[in-house]
Length: 330
Image (tube, rainbow, N blue to C red):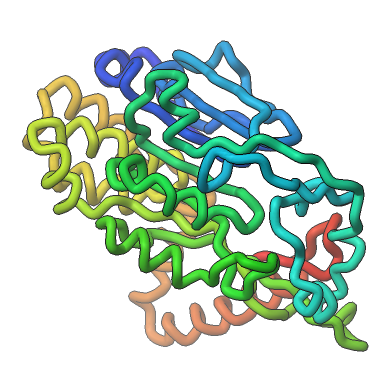
């Protein structure tokens, strides 16, 4: 969480206000971004069934819609499930459901015929020609929706999508399909938050390992592509990437981008971003300093190796989600 005084960033906020657009597809239950730059952001959030928990007053503009998003504008059957988060336009794959014992999470709760809209059609309604950050959590439709809007995707700066290594829905493409598509548009993977599910076995209640099934995967438009697409506007695009990277806890990548382009920025913006990127002391930084010190002592690496294995064992043993007793994240 950022703790610098907001007034320090006024010039950067003024520069971005009205020109920093976030598109959140599948926003059910989402909360506000932990950034002081929200007052400059136009937030467009869409979900077919539920509302987000964002605060309208925190943003320059917030457009919150209960709408269905698809690859094109058409009527389509939506499968409601008792576990709301698994509702989708796609049927669940029965083979995958059974090997994890997920039957109760896909228990049928009726269907609704919905009018889907494409990304472009929806954004045209609000006269939005491009977006800076796209987040998708569309229960199997992420690739369909993004691949239907290359003109929007190709000019985005950051994209985060829930992608599966083992497709849970019938017709959902595997992880590498989206990676190839976005790579072809100039993106690269910067980070992933992976999720493992326990296979249905007699002793899984005693185990804390499982199979890697999906990851919230974050792609950034490559620096060379940013310069190629945005030309004289590239510094502004990099500022947005820096803010998003820092917001997602990617401190090193945010600093890397800043060091790469700081000479292209006005001095006041340089100073504000430099302040923004300051690493304030916390438990992680204290531990980093301690471990760095230990390496200078004889046998230091051996001690750290033992501590590392011990910490991993504790993390693995305590990894448990109270709602999904057999599901954990890496």
